[in-house]
Image 1 (cartoon, helix red, strand yellow):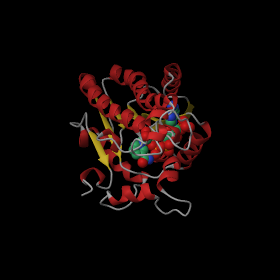
Image 2 (image 1 turned 90 degrees about the vertical axis):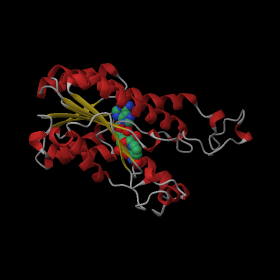
Image 3 (image 1 turned 90 degrees about the horizontal axis):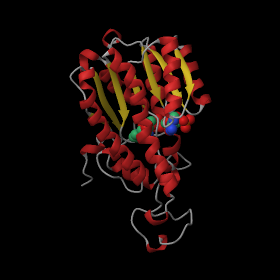
Length: 282
Ligand SMILES: NC(=O)c1ccc[n+]([C@@H]2O[C@H](COP(=O)([O-])OP(=O)(O)OC[C@H]3O[C@@H](n4cnc5c(N)ncnc54)[C@H](OP(=O)(O)O)[C@@H]3O)[C@@H](O)[C@H]2O)c1
């Protein structure tokens, strides 16, 4: 694996303090790749760096917001000066916010003109938060692609992996802003794959099904760790009848960064979802 990995020794992982990308960052480091860990909360990144170093790997922590282009450019400068150019970019930063999620699945007349936080429909949702979720996920992917993609374009080699979702393919109830953003990421991934092909940069996306993280835990599981109604409805439509585990994304990432194994693969959005996409629910 290591020798075919786009000749790469430097990777950038955004959202590296999170559930899914901390596991991917650790795997890259185990392969001998230097990993720059980017996220807003330094302490979360430091935990991942410490784990990487404990396993003999090399990592650097950069606290930065992925929607802040200047901060991401500064991050690139720091990485370039210490390690050289980046040739793998994993765009994991993103996610949803509870107040951008409606409390109901369909329109209810009570939502008209009301701003009660416990009853959130499309008509009284806070559009500032809605916009925040859209920007965090979309521009938070576009900006690192632009900044670190430049490193790759100069060297005529690179792999970008974006994070899509089940929402990329069809809308899921209650999560309009997040769904809109993840659909955008799917489209952008395909567009960028075509655009960057002459620069020998492959761009793909992983679309995880349902994995438990700190936020989704509150939606999918009750206090006793049993599935909530929403958790149950997801499991009903997941043929493998369980939620995913972060380590189950590692094989996909390893394949996508391996020049020999996936050198002809670009512009794809790969569901890792326990069969969710395949099941019509009927
Ligand atoms: N878990 C799932 O079931 C699932 C399903 C489909 C897609 N995904 C996607 O997969 C990716 C990783 O998800 P996850 O489950 O690992 O979520 P997570 O545990 O919440 O991790 C996401 C990380 O992104 C960072 N982040 C968010 N906004 C950022 C910003 N503007 N700048 C810098 N860092 C930012 C967060 O850290 P800070 O807040 O400290 O910055 C957090 O550590 C996300 O894009 C998510 O949308 C997840």
